[in-house]
Length: 271
Image 1 (spheres, rainbow, N blue to C red):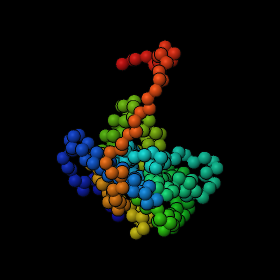
Image 2 (cartoon, one colour):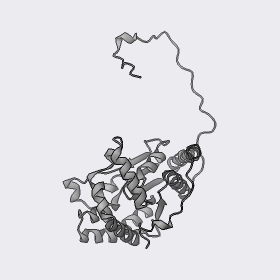
Image 3 (tube, helix red, strand yellow):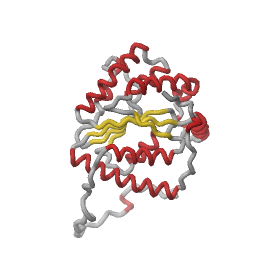
Image 4 (cartoon, rainbow, N blue to C red):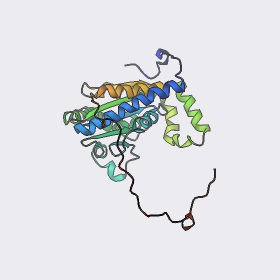
């Protein structure tokens, strides 16, 4: 099994120009809207997992996927540290509570794969718990797929050089500082342990019913486009968008007049 350290095999491609990227993204997002309409029309259930290194670009692709979608049918789940009560539950229990129902798309920004990843490397789970996960996870995912859930698992792979560049950028930019948690900083000292844990995770959980798909993410723009395109290929759908444009009913007319602005506290213009 190849490890994250084989960065010499990455193929350098010419960077996409912003105009070209935006055009491709607009087309793909239109297709995502069609997909959501189809999911609702057919009562499908789609569950997507996004895993990978810190600063690998998971959040960026999730944002572009959900951007054009109706949030009532496309939910992002990003669970925090489990509570004391949740620590005593069946491990998959708090994740199962967020699984999609008919007509829904759920995107997990990190998922139950916290256990063989960060929990294992940082010592938050015992080796016995990790091995139990490796045994039970394939069974759990087979149950999901057998129940009719479309399960898509994506691993975002970033080279150590590019990850370092992104970490430095986050450290300097106050708007990105929140993305560098204490856990992210500690993970820098455990690159090899994370690589070995990821390889072991793939070996045990890359099953025919729920394969792992790796997204090369050194180029963020291409990674977003490639991932969205791949998602659209995994779910056969038809265009069931309402035909034509929506005819707006005429606006009601009458003798109503708005009260003067002096009756309200108006936010002053600052710009």
